[in-house]
Image 1 (cartoon, rainbow, N blue to C red):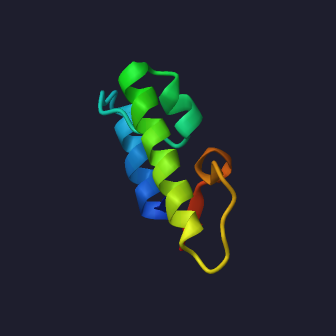
Image 2: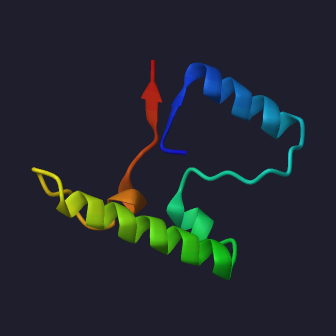
Length: 74
């Protein structure tokens, strides 16, 4: 999850309280700890973001996904 609105936060809280088993993540670091497939997915996402960052006018730092905080959208 990269950004969330107040409504989205309410939905995730309700899902968590209902005991849902659908996994979701707010941290690539935590995702990578879940297993080899999840680690590969997290690494691929981080590489894709780093490559995308190179194409921007202002180059973003490498591994930005591992350091970014979740944005709150109003």
